[in-house]
Length: 370
Image (cartoon, rainbow, N blue to C red):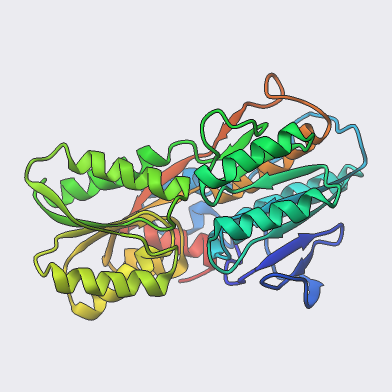
């Protein structure tokens, strides 16, 4: 299973897969022997309908193998920085670790630092990139915190000779000189699809709120835009509040309570990141409300809310593939390759919308929950 209970603030994976836990600097370290890269049970062993089994199997893909590319070196050193400490990026890290292990079996050592602040911050990301420039990494990878602020910095880095890629859920602005992107290329559509599901559930009438996430984060902003454009199609639907929770469960909870207080006739909430479905569901449960929630990803608590019918549906991204493919493409970029036959400029990873009937299987596969 995915061991997503760990809150890995900095992950520096070495040949021995050492996991370093800290918020801004390395502290204690250990051999992380309890991370299991295989699901606890097979799809077939979990009691569910065939259609649900197929859906979950397509959303959670643990079966990855390196392609046939032969690296030019026997050691690579990468630096990755992402938006904020969160379980979502822990899942990405597991895909990275699997790729690292497979390279090690081929006699190639991959070391990398995987670093983020406790709260999303473009200013923090600027400082981290400035420090990384001084340290001679083969490739620097960025999950963009704010596209307008970070994209020009990436352009300057590339112009200065650094090999820069983007990854995860947030690419840079269109036209940025970064070499390649691995991750979700359809955040707008994810927001639109989740909102369409909500609209159908509400029979295309009612008042809704949007919890966006971090200001300027491309993935959050794009999902919110997809949600707004979808709501605009239906004359009997109205957005009564749009709030930024900064990818914080606690802030999403507080904002949801306020929205409910301000709009007691609220019918639905659209959640644009992994944290806010949890915060919203806590507030909705406390209020004993039947407000319909749709949101993103595989947070354990969110999946339990989905199982219990508090959350209507979740869009689950294939984090594992994002991590695995990021390492593979970083190796190719380090060797001087450009997008083309070996890899695309944008490697798209899938999002699958799951419902109540799929929640038990997802919980079993990812967390071993019964």
